[in-house]
Amino acid sequence: MSWLGKLLGGTFGFLLGGPLGALLGAAIGHKLDGDKDKYAQIESDLSPGAQHRIQMAFFTATFSVMGHIARADGRVSEAEITVARTVMNRMDLSEGMRRAAIELFTRGKQPDFPLREAVEQFRKECHRRYALIRIFLEIQLEAAFADGPVNLAEERVLIAICDQLHISRFEYHAMKGRLDAAIRFARAYRSSSYGGNRNMPSRRREDTLQDAYAMLGIKASAGADEIKRAYRKLISRHHPDKLVAKGMPEEMVRIANEKTQQIRKAYEVIAAARNL
Image 1 (cartoon, rainbow, N blue to C red):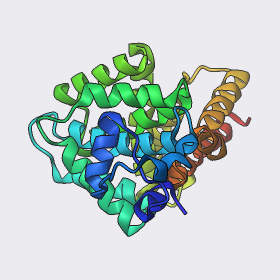
Image 2: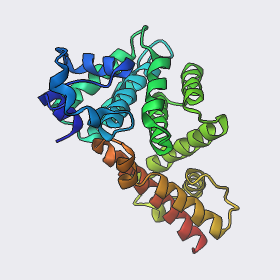
Image 3: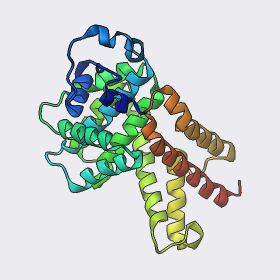
């Protein structure tokens, strides 16, 4: 049973606390009755740094901040709503969790959404689990790319989030470049006109190869050892088992799996071109 299922079922009788706890509590309509004895037995499960607490923070921050970024330019496009739904579908959420995610996304769009406070609490709850913080930012970037290139309003919000999460501008732009390349790479392989890389026209195949290099964060001139190091580093960073162990909700395993599959495909394209 997921942490939210336990929460909805009453196994976890109190929430996270702070702005994220308030957002999640409002999203699921959970009311606390103040009976401290009733909740004492599971305090250890929700102490700072505990698995369930981190999972709650990750889930709550992911969808509420996604809603805020979607609203950054003054309107929420249909493409941005579709991306939010796509993330929910990829997570294979239960009906209860889907309703909570939608409500969190909606609350994130409100003018009084406490972005700074929510992100600060998320950072503290992650407790130096930088792999989770990177995945969180990747999901937010993916949402920002939903309706085309990241615009200035979205960029300002994303950079403010990075500053709070102690992610450098260099790392942010590197992550953004990798994701932009991954979107083009995936689009090329989804095209029904081509049966994979071998059947692509030479120009398209070359563009896809360049995107594969960009996905690994390396130049086309990189040597074999550098290519392999970059590949292994990204695979390790996105390994689902490692991320779940650090506190990523199990429902997000599919997203992590998709990312590792994309990285493997990019490496395979490079390896075939370079005879590695």
